[in-house]
Length: 268
Image (tube, rainbow, N blue to C red):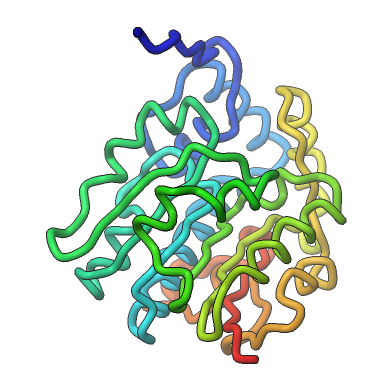
């Protein structure tokens, strides 16, 4: 039986393809680039913010792999952009297992790039919705790839600001946290308007193309980590979380980053 044809809606801007364009990727089309142009008119720092956020993902993943994590769950994966999370994790620990989760047909169309694992490790992809964390946690693919009796590092990178309802966003994160054993980790990045009021105008562009978006304050962001122990330096802007030499040399400002990040461990 033939698979139904997926309408990728190339004539409409899409958040995943817009992010790909910010990062210098090639999986984007005129509608995406036009929308990014509108975002950058309102918030000229958008390219810097996206790339600073991606840098946090790389540093946080490497940090967790260096501190013994060998299982990673990346929810809201987005279009593959080198280096992908599994490339970073397996660069430190080739035996690491990584599961990617996204429900977007545009991402799914490119998912094969996420499945090229180091020989010693393993990667897998689950088509599932962040809004239904219970389905992710029950997935046979998840349990074939990860052992949930052992520590897992969960990445929610630049995805929770696409969940506009606060209580729903917290419910999603708490459901995932509750399913993880001691020693697990949670890495999150999230857009904020605390440093640049013009970012709210840029968010309006996303809403105009059909992508619900909600910026959150530091206090709102910190709530995602309740009950877990934050890794130093705690809640920070993306460029200030354990910056490497490249990040330090870039001289990014807080207003340019406009993205809170944090990594926490489940200790008790």
